[in-house]
Amino acid sequence: MIQVIAFDLDDTLWAVRPVIINAEKRLDEWLQQEVPRLNYDVSSMRELRHELLEEEPDLVNKITEFRRSLIERAMLLSQIDANEATDLSNQAMAVFLTARNDVEFYEGAIDAISMLADKFILGALTNGNADISRLGLDSYFSFAFSAEEVGASKPADNLFKRALAHTGTEPRQMIYVGDNPVLDIDAANRVGLHTVWVQHPGQENTGETSADENIDHIRHLPQAIDRMLARFNADHAGE
Ligand SMILES: [Mg+2]
Image: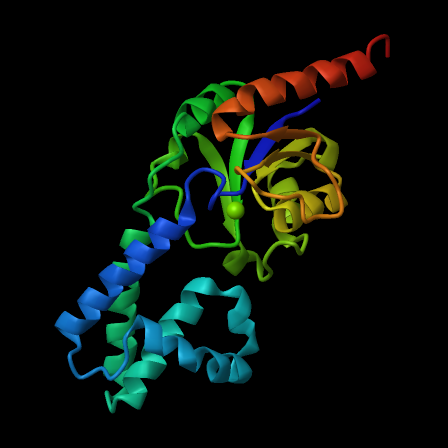
């Protein structure tokens, strides 16, 4: 029987693009104000990504530390001394992360989550750096893991395996809900989870597998879960 529903966050519970655009804008404003000596802005800093990754390839799975290191490197290249660069890059990341968690949930998302929280253990599995407690989701979600914590981003199975171990469940007892056909649906299907694809308008299935349920909006999730449960019950009738 289904016990756990795990969620992707970005583009499943809110649109992530406007959030990142705003967070980068806040970061640029803060850097201009507080570190006028810096010869880079968020956009020109991107040119340093490649060399930073060459030196520290692990950063590819550490989205927060990657961005902080990028800011630190831009500061070092602007002749800011090492201690100050570490300190200022941490302050800059705090500004970014505050804005990163200022999201606008899709309409009906919280109602759907609140409804499902009565019957299931809920949790979040994200490649990003949203924080469920800052988002007010911790009253519904009993776990949240990020790629940065588990050492690998989806489509790797680390996040799914961590959720299964944490909840003490088998793959068939967990439903995973996400928007990305490859990173979410194919990846969770490979682990043997049940899946719900939140398909945005015009989005093609670029994956190799299909989800158990497709929905065109997160507010339709409770009905999709009901349909899945009805099918499982029918399949196991008489056992
Ligand atoms: Mg997503």
